Image (tube, rainbow, N blue to C red; front, side, top):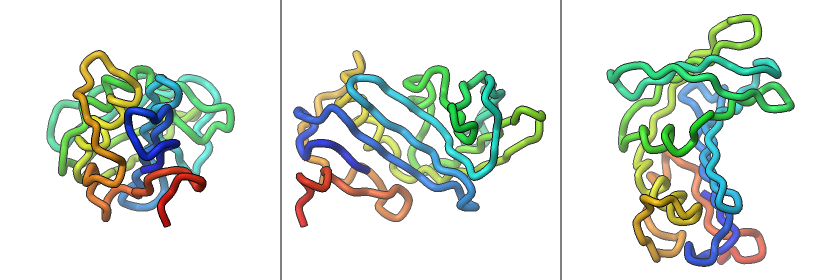
Length: 160
């Protein structure tokens, strides 16, 4: 996890990433100046138009959405990031299928670890209406360090 400030009260940017089980994709959850974003970046070209995405948490029901494609064509961007992030549960498996421009399937799995800590930090920094007050600094235990890449602070503010 990366943020532009050590204190959540002062941060305007927060980024959390998680690699897929096969290492071919990255789940990106972020807040950037009060805008919440969720996306999946792949090593494959997906297309430049709207992408059909199916996702499921563990054995729950599948949810189908149309996500936007990034200008580079290798990233699918959630149509409703807050809803998507709120659906993610601790220690669960996110199974996500992206259908590319040619309707080819890109099947991905992410082992989520302690995702609720990251979610509450994004909610706090992005000032979600449902955000809990969390005044802990970013060095807290919001994420399983073996599952989520964690790094608090920018290069200038990072304690070394």
